[in-house]
Length: 267
Image 1 (cartoon, helix red, strand yellow):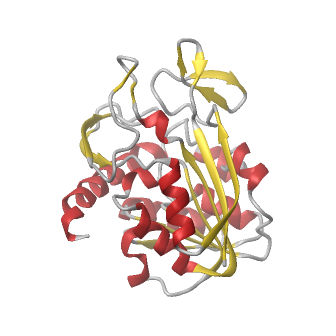
Image 2: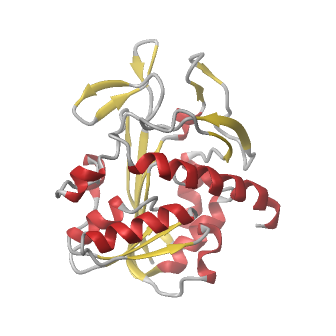
């Protein structure tokens, strides 16, 4: 953890800045959410088990719209995020909408230092694990927070997608990077707004097989696995809309892998 302190500090600054832009963006449409829209995309909605009456922990929850969507569906929810600004906004949104939820500021890699409870469901999605250096340590944290027989579900951008340099349409990063950290001097964000943002960011690429092995090695038996050639959000440069809530990135006219999902059960 100490070796990665600089990376986490930089990424926290980046996500605090992004949150400021995201709250007012058309992309997140917070007003639509306040009026009853569900923020969860179609992949999650079709694959997730029923959350009614379940305790649910959402890892890397950003400013809480997905978390609160689960609360509206009948779950008792807790969201965790590294960004203090995200947690501040999420807590305010929960109060404004009179939708009970607990939000905690924490690094996921040291979650067991601040959260002792266990949950029926642990959830994470889209653009989460790329900010974490050690996928085995992450899976250990997931397992610690699950009750025996509890369900873990993740929907995540496919690591093959992260290999590409969007502007030049070429592969710029390795798929099998074995924990190597990558750095970018980033500008703007993936939503509208925030065009003048500039910040440092550090990220990691985790092969799908490494995620699978990490879960299995930590007592989470994988019972469901899917891959998709689209993602539900127009959040990458050069992405094309194929259908409603289906956005693809094409190479030589072919849509490349965009999303993978795992469902697991703690043995």
